[in-house]
Length: 114
Length: 114
Image (cartoon, rainbow over all chains, first blue to last red; front, side):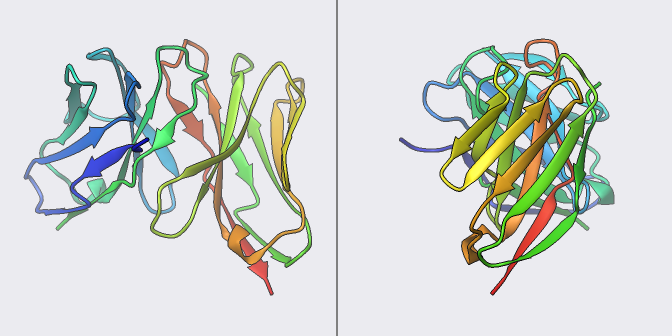
């Protein structure tokens, strides 16, 4: 069974630009979570999508947005990039709405903002 | 929202000794507590999880204990080996059916000394 995949592996942007990150969940999983892992800050919850809907977001500004497609893959968009957006962005998937389902992580996209 | 504190931030033990990592959480409604291991440059991997209806769970050399009254849970690794060297994250799910994603501790860097 294929795991969670993310693309691209690395992304380099300059301040003010937009970044688009992609995630494909494990087959059969309907929930996709996005986390930001900045140096020294651990993993911070960004967004949760399930069945094509944004279910909730963490304490991040509106320039962090995304969507989930009919095949349950997901896209994270970061607009008006700032230097502090440099981080590893991790996607996780789980099956269904019940929050105790195990979350499986992808390898991440390393975003560098210059 | 949920807040998870993790200690220590760095733990160095001799190979063959035991290691204990402790976490506390703030939301008494949380009832799912996973532990992830993240090796350098790799994705977080679930190593064990516990749900609130049990007080202890074991899987070979790894065990997790949960004290819901005190709102703390711990990871125990016995007979440590060099491959146990990694960063370990505890997490808790907040109330609300998954809407908050997972709240993570800031991580413990476990170093196994030969």
